[in-house]
Image 1 (cartoon, one colour):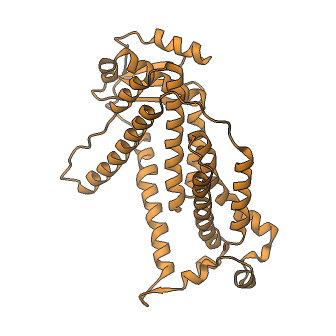
Image 2: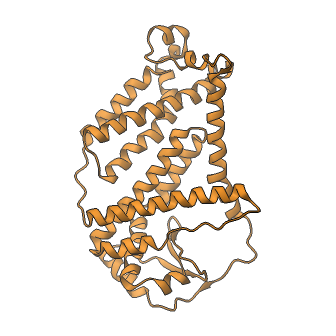
Image 3: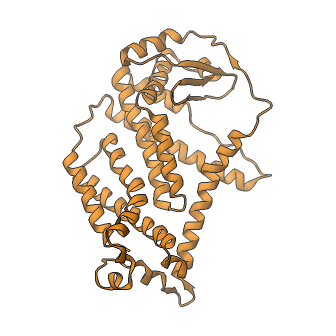
Length: 327
């Protein structure tokens, strides 16, 4: 319990509380102002991920006595230390459950975020070389680049029997796809898939995702940050889907291309924990694909409304004001 009275402990507790308060206020803003545009939602959700990292030290600079007992008892709207001292069923202290929540979130972060990075960095002796495309997609890519006013990225083809498509690089971009994708996709599907990756490049999704990921790493113990990081990545996909459909005018082709990436986890009786983890991740992946397809089919080509900066600034000020009183 004393740990949560230290500077680091207060930061951990309050960053969790502040992110939760920000999440609630933003969800209320979405509902009250009927904010459905994913670009707007992306900007609002960034507040949940970024503000809790910085506002605690800023609050402490403004008022060093903010963590004192007097402030907690006489000024604060919410004092979490009182709740941490409560014993559930007169046996388990709430701070133990809270610590278990943070530890569980940190473990999930390691398994889902750090471990895959470590595995990717390990040498792969059987890495398959890139292939020469058996199908001319350069012309299609050049036409799309002209429409978008973008430089043509390099194309790399992997000798894989399942659909793969992603963009690599931050400055010098390359679109990586699999041989199976070239063989399976129609021209319309390929156009939609390539356009989607080009939109990611133009929007700077790679560098944005890396910055957001760094912020997520700083809050590795925070379950709210874990949720909002996933939502931000999803919003970015929805934004790129909308721009792609506006560019190609072929929503059905993009929807069918997205459906091709539906995941089917393999059963692994020898490693049940790994199998369960793969099944959960696959289910989450498939739900996102299904939602993307449904949104494309429902909305088709949709124009993004003008962003309401007044509402955004007002929401930010409300978050800052309320969180100052939450300790």
